[in-house]
Length: 620
Image (tube, rainbow, N blue to C red; front, side, top):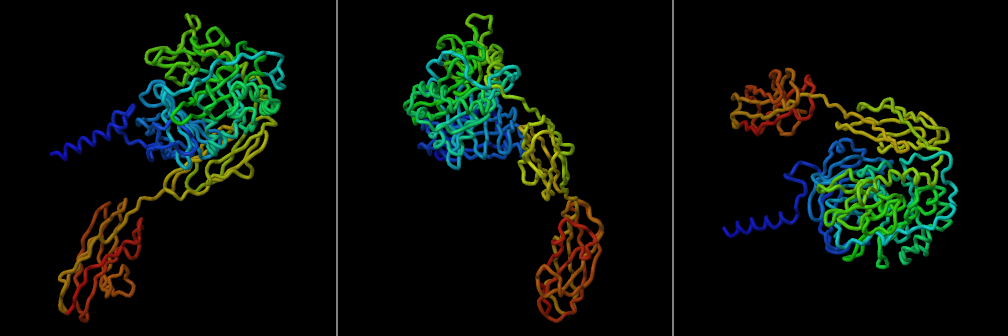
């Protein structure tokens, strides 16, 4: 009895270690990532508070847009340091081959967000549950999930800087033609220490920070998206991690090299990413737009600190969204704002100990901009423009987006239409065409994410064109799909698996003879049981009886004794027949063999399992 009580207590201890968030009972869902082992010490160069982290393995196939079968699953399990959750997919954005973002929320958690980004085989992600942030980062060949302690969160910034607006110097600022504001182009620079720290995962990290901002816009009712037009190493001692963030911001704002780079890539805003260090008092700094016109274009710059210090402080993954918010006219919550934003209502919003929006200083921080149209814990997360102490940064961005999108005019916008007349193939494969319609001078690249779909003879061009692709035969029984991407437009190509016809399968279930010890000249009965183990009814057939001196599954060289008819057999149907034989052979050891359908009159799914052998028979 004592052992039983101890065992029950032990189970209770282990099952209480990890709670299940939003899960009332276990369901047969696949897991996006599973805990590999608890990380007791700082792993690699990715610093984070030492507690509340786990090492995980990731099943990329569950979110890969080229895997149509698994993508049918909208809900996935995920193991976090303190709980297990169900992630629900809202959408997948595909930018190209091995470059996509899976986003959604946590089932049962109000205003939660999930943003998982994959670039070049590396994943970075962010999950926000009740204002608690979890970061997913590469760690050598595995990944870390880190739960951030809100008490160790560093401030976003002190106060956004107010620029001294003078005559603009941008060459490509808008005049005449206008961008419509649906896309705002961003140039991201990074230091050499960022490159060293994040290595091959840096591209995924940068795109993930952009995706987090875009998800916040969508969640908050903001009708614009950031477009990452270029990333580049900016190796300059005047802005590295040893330089105060205020000085770094001033330097990149006035650097002619960056100005030229910005014009070349037609970026509306520029941000420099640095690794968060002990020299930093804040996680970011940006210029604050107060007057909504193109005179602010030369000040649309920010510096963002990324990462954390072991067991000390950390910067949130939404810092980029926060700092770009200043460039777009958003200010902090009223209790922490310095001066005004773009409008009288351009403030973040919070309810003490309940939530804070992205531009607010108080937390826990949810991944939303202030808006009275969304509620959390029964509280609106903003205040309308006509209310006292209005706070409506979502409206701020909606009203400044066209101005910001034209800080640097993108030029003639290339719109693309992609048509696949035939996108479904049977297992034998075939060929198809891709019809691309666009304006003259608009370049395009066509990509396939699967080696069995090959685009020929070219994968890039300019202007309208019709190109071809070939689909290889599919020898697998499972269907498959591939994605063709042309300038961000994705088209699915599907192919059926090889159809296996339902066939019978005749087997010799048993062969027996009685008696086993006989004298020469005696009669012996040989019984054979034949069964149809296939998936279809079999036609009538026959079985042949043989006498052999060996028990090999072959009748080569054996003496045929006779044959018996086998009737038509349904699936799993069987028939037993008896053959009587006069033992007129010389004394010795023999075996009876039975060969079912030796003449192959029945087409079977397996033609190699039609022989049965008896036990040894002694003739004296």
